[in-house]
Length: 214
Length: 70
Image (cartoon, rainbow over all chains, first blue to last red; front, side):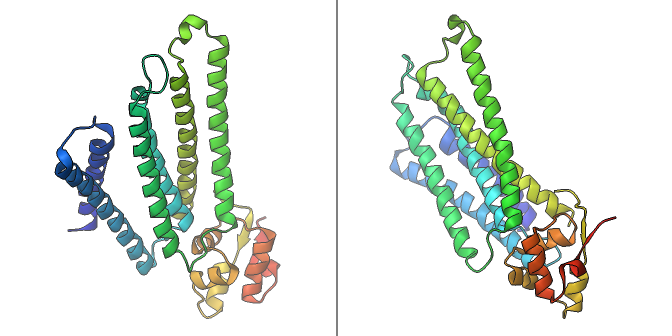
């Protein structure tokens, strides 16, 4: 199967696997069904990862195309995982709030799923670090790109926090009924994850723009 | 990163030094190959320290590698 066709099949399947595993309400399929669903999802993600690695290796051998640097790989992978975490968190955050505004019992299961995504991210980064063992992972240009992207993320987070502060300070109390403790907690977490997402996006785009014109 | 006011002849010097590869130059200077590509494309202006490292790798002075665009 050609690489493009594999991408065309695996990318939608990966999104579907994420949707089934994290977004759809939990369905009891019994342990064989649950295990099969989990194994299937991870298999699809692994195949997508393997195809991406194959593309990177081909670009390296070819030599004509500018290769993707460790910093850029780190940025795109970070973007994918933070986007997945943000999407999951945003879609399930309402279920984390109990009727009285405190933490609902479902919150721990949702937290476990987010933890699973973070562990998967750490595993992927560990595997990549092993691969980069003999190469320079980061130099002054990488640090400059990261610092600039960090600046964008800081501005975005500041704007978000100021907007939230202004909303709370100037809204009449009866219009702040939605602002329960757990809702505010979720809102702050979403803002933090979104700023991180923006940082990875700005980093990835900076690398991509440099590579495109090389 | 857009174009910089600093021009360079890194590509020419690589070919004059036994067709040195971008990776070999990157290894000699402790940078990534992608940074060498960005330098050659004029998309990145190096720090003074890196400019000296690159000049040292070719055994020439900094002014022989980098020029201020008029």
